[in-house]
Length: 386
Image (cartoon, rainbow, N blue to C red; front, side, top):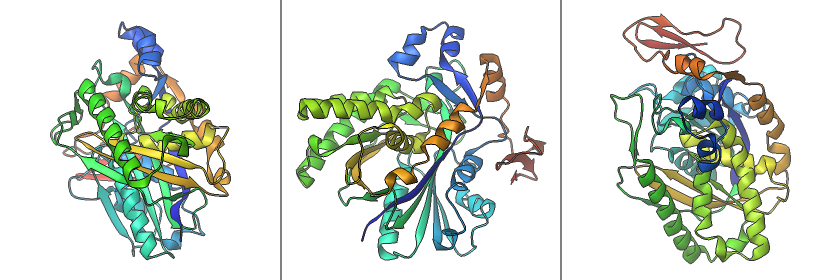
């Protein structure tokens, strides 16, 4: 029996900042952003969006009349949680009108939690092949105005339906993983912005990838020539290249060209959105499947998931016969192309207008005529959605 991702969808808010304009405003060279770290734009999050709205708006694209009765578990992966007790998955259940007879769980480990959610979903569906699990990775990367991490901000959600006999890809039983206590990135409970050591984070990311790659080869006997491409966690797109460059000489010359081409394909969406934390590696996967010209059913894709602090996992998937029909490539392109461009001053105003204070009843700038789920504001200490 095969278990894997049957459906996938992406959502990001409707505002976008050009990083060339940000670089000029911050007296930086634009090439530092667009070439040095490999980012062109980043999503800007209005105060009527949060991880719940983004997750619901992504998931609504793949929860249908045909599959909703099979879903009995929602796993919500985020490091931008809205409550220290209540799971964001409970809001998703209500907003999508799913049955009360479902599990609703939120999990956290920096940018890695979405992968753990998928592994849990895989194991559950393996035991219950007639059921499905909705996995949502939704996050807001927020570092602060004029900070070193500002250029690696972003936001969005990737929703995935894990089922037996999947249309898009099947999980291979070959995961390797590791954890290490590292102070490269963390976000204390009393802070809205993360604390990050960017250089250390890059070093640990590369080290963990290399360690897991060697372990993976030992345990599976697979080689670099076995894979049609890689999907990497991409807090910025150059990060994946730094990791892959460490092992590229293990491939033959023709394979090196293919892997490099497909790495660029996997970066396209991330270049226009920015950092999704838990969803970044799966936006990379979606971008790869949407833009690579040489993929076919039966191809194996390697996925490297990393979460600061630090935890990482390397595993592979196999593309299924109908994978191309299950990829929302054009829908994702349209979503990104229709976003409203904001100036640096508008971005700064939006950034500073968030509604974090539960002690004060206050509305957001939500529109009454919205066709998507929105956060309306606080009422008696409760978040209100519509």
